[in-house]
Amino acid sequence: MLTETPIKDVIEEIEGYGGDPVKYCYQCGKCDTVCPWNEVRSFSMRKLIREATFGLTEIENEEIWRCTTCGRCQEVCPREVKQIQDMIAVRRMATGYGVFPEHIKPIRAVTAGLGAEGNPFGEPRANRADWSKGLDVKTYEEGMEALYFPGCYLCYDPRLKKVAVATAKILNAAGVDYGILGEEESCCGESIRKTGNEEMFKELAKANIKNWIEHGVKKIVVSSPHCYHTFKNEYPEFNVHFEIVHISEYICQLIKEGRLQFNKEYAKKVTYHDPCYLGRHNNIYDEPRDVLNQLPGLELVEMPETGVNSLCCGMGGGRIWVDTIMADRFVNLRLEQAVATGATELVTTCPYCVTNFEDARVVMNLDNQIEIKDLTEVLAELL
Image 1 (cartoon, rainbow, N blue to C red):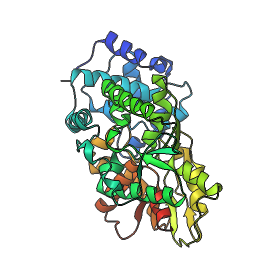
Image 2 (image 1 turned 180 degrees about the vertical axis):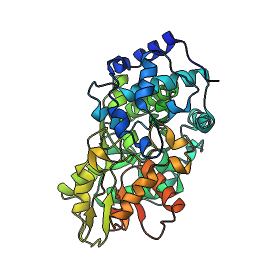
Image 3 (image 1 turned 135 degrees about the vertical axis):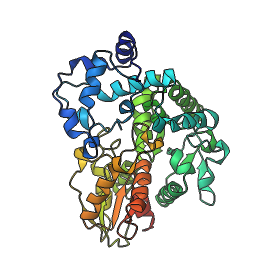
Image 4 (image 1 turned 30 degrees about the horizontal axis):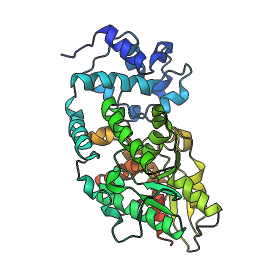
């Protein structure tokens, strides 16, 4: 039997977390027409908003955990109802009560890892900079051009470490005076905040901010759009402001300044996937494409849903840590779109997207038809 949280508690929680505009919803249903979940199953954000409006949210209901925070609904909502904040608010209640449906329980282990080692994998903090061994990567010192913040996936995941290495090679080739902070870094906290664990997010954010201030950091270059979004748009809640630059923006700038040149030919047909947190949430669409279009021999082809209409891979909103059954994976639909373009490589700029596409490629037996690459991996091949 599902547990209904007291009406007053639900309404107050939503209002307290900035979700007060939920009351503006007039049930037009536009959110449901663009939600990627409805590509694979029946799901109604409209219904969840209606239940929250009247304080009738069932916190044991797995539906409140489905939102990937992709932002499609907020793009089309005529009343500026903050669906993402509303879903995070009800998740905060579920987390507070310790209520997690079976598929969501892995988040408990993630929380433990973040608390103990500052990363969701629970890997030793001391190993955070292991990816940089053998490379000319310095420890950040005040006065350097930028701090490079790889993010948890690039520091620990075997596949994504290749992206960190490629990024370092590019920065070195451009002569950028940069450094990392290695084991002093902590997770940005974006995903755990989206699951409703506000206290853990604050703990991680304060640790990073303290660290940056102590090291005199001014400019931070990041690989993950999730880190980018959090540092740029959420850390200012703590009354701090750093210059945050996504690696795709930075590379575009380095090319324009003449510090980075690519003369080798890259004779491949490529399609580019817009990550939700780089595109819809932060309006960065052109820079990755501008970089790809400057590579000799490369042919860039677009998928049906691109730019602001890009189809979410499904890993946002904390779902990177959740088991999603095969039938519910809309990443499979996106990969099919990529293959249909005739491209031999799908390029993106997000570790969550790379991880999900790599998994889908294997499950769908498309290993020999298309490769998955981060933008930096393409460029590193040409150095």
